[in-house]
Length: 343
Ligand code: BYC
Image (tube, rainbow, N blue to C red; front, top):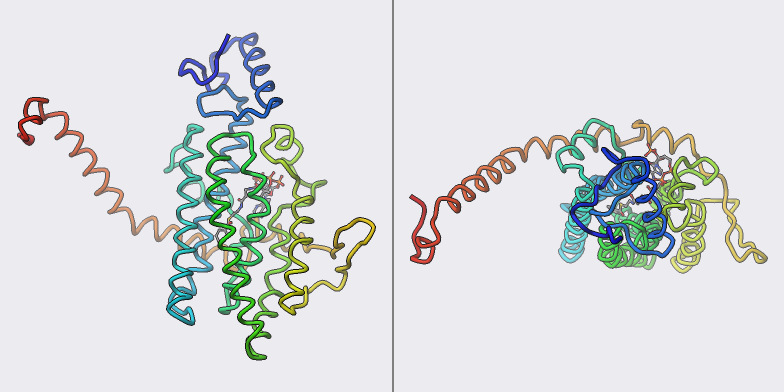
């Protein structure tokens, strides 16, 4: 029996007999075992669907809220060229959010529901975007460290088991890679500049280093979802594995810049072939995740205001779409051929 990608295959177990569910479950497991993607019309366990909605939505919200810390510097970028690059980067983040919302919608949730869950705090976005961007060097540090951390996590997501998410990640990773380089290039320019510019770069690294490490999520031993998400091949690597990869990649980059990582416990472990690093402040992380970081309220208030201010655009677009649909249905094929319009 081939139940792959046919419209008759139910996405969830509602209305299915237990033996049907067992059969669909076996097909789902076989699909994962052979590294075939789960597609929107395939049957999937309800918990898998919910986990995917949670993660993709959280990721989409992060891209959208993540525009704010950098948007803060567009009008104050030091040169026209820097301003153009920063604007393009912030627009890229909006694009990432849109691909990801579309991927989440394939799981049966609407864009309006997702927005409502973000605005009312029922869905999260990344902790990292609740810290303020205080200097121009923060545009360098965000690109270098935050996009660097994001891409470390996202390369694995190009191989995630849900097809629409994996495909969205391929393009997103290409753009994130450029973002990371542009951030590093800002840092390099500052580090080759005056003493004041070097100090600005160091201050920025001091403030963004630990939140960037925390961005990978809680330690594996305390991570609620990792074990199940690895079993479902949603996550291909764990929070701790990715965090270690990021540290190993970033420490030599800091050395090249002549900057000091703000961690007295940081040391190269020759035998393990990894850098060992100090304790992350998990109390600070959870405080931010629970809504009590330096900028949580400001970020959500800004987002809700933008949504409310844009209500007239959505209404106009819907009204135009409804009118166009009405016009199309009222024009007969003959009238269309004759170039006629609606009565
Ligand atoms: N912040 O069991 P765990 C970008 C939550 S944006 C807040 O390990 P999971 C960019 C987690 O949700 C790219 N919450 O969870 C944009 C869970 O709570 P719930 C952002 C966090 O899902 C603009 C609980 O802690 N990237 O690139 O297995 C400018 C337990 O965690 C965080 C993504 O979104 C956090 N940092 O693993 C510049 C990547 N970490 O939901 C750049 C996609 C954990 O049970 N997401 N929590 O209430 C993922 O890969 C995974 O969801 C995570 C967490 C690795 C983040």
